[in-house]
Length: 149
Ligand code: IDP
Ligand code: MG
Image (cartoon, rainbow, N blue to C red; front, side, top):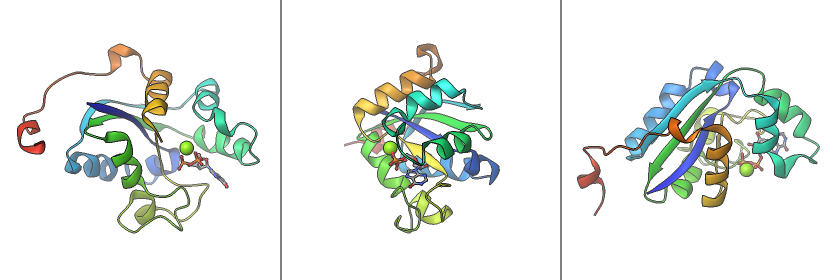
């Protein structure tokens, strides 16, 4: 099964959106494989956003991501990486589709509530940055026989 890395950013945690966001992924049928609340150390923020290190918004992004606790999760399911990217919506919440998380809960590109891996390769890389192997749990869930053909 595919696994993806998802993180409610500090604005989402402060705004009390963790429960709503977890509910959406659960209702979709995805299975939670790991979760924790954490203020990220600088090294892991730099590692996660390494493709953006030279961008003008990076210094502000780093301060934002380290401004408070993030809620980090691993979610599993068929096509989980692409499914979750569609559920979070476009990077700029002003353009994100209504019904998506960013479309429903945010206004500003610099405060867009949630992160999710953008490819299966990024998912493996990002899960490796944030979770030790023992922190991800393998188990079967009783709805699997009715969720999948
Ligand atoms: P993504 O989160 O949808 O994958 P990326 O382009 O990878 O979007 O950018 C990573 C994060 O950097 C965004 O989610 C957002 O928090 C921040 N970011 C991207 N572009 C801007 C910008 O123009 N201004 C401020 N922050 C930005
Ligand atoms: Mg990205």
